[in-house]
Image (tube, rainbow, N blue to C red):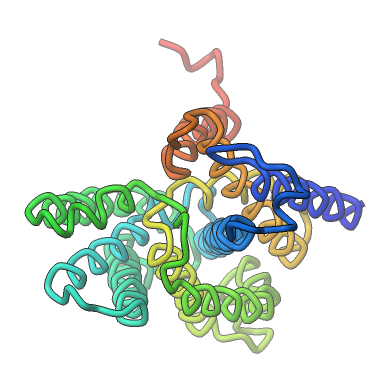
Length: 325
């Protein structure tokens, strides 16, 4: 059954990719795309690849973070990890105007790491290795970090005309329409996704409890460090490409966990495919509904994410008529 679900998601991803290649400011036939006289296919293919990589990375980050903390609301966006990455990218771009993509990538990963460490400290992660106390404190600490980092990032963007021209659209989450040397972050995401798959077994043991994991030969502190490191790299590379896009890492794992309930490894694979499809679909929808202009994928995802979050809360916290006042 799990294999059939994965096959369905894979077909959905391929159909979304076909729509992403064909649809845009102007609808183009596949024959015209294949002839590619104006270089349209290469441009749209690069954009689709960016959307797929960022969507998969954010979905996997959310899944791993939720598994680590036993909190279904843990997400790189809500916890402020993406915001920390965005802040350091903007700061680097402003103070080092000629910074290369490699420099911005390093800045994004460092920003995500600093935000993650701050989050872990504020949520009292060290004493929360049993995952009892951290589940509630995590989103509260994350909201504070997100608000602080995004406010500083917007202040830096609006204080400089050149930075504003480069990053005012990026800060809301925008898939790059043309090649901007994102090849290095794309490679980093690909390598991290492959490495992350080998971490699912270790993290599955951790979900049984820190003591149980240690008794089976897997130091829980190492598991926490490796998982946070993976989330940091994936989130930082995603922000370097497309800005701090929210809700992908929240909604996709929520859906996937109901499709692959028993296996974290199966959920990991489902998240890769569904995350890629989700963000690619948001990008296509943003291009179609505002022709000849477009709405950024981050805005479309935020609109869908707001509705999805309401549904999630209603499912996770069902109302009890006896408790109504």
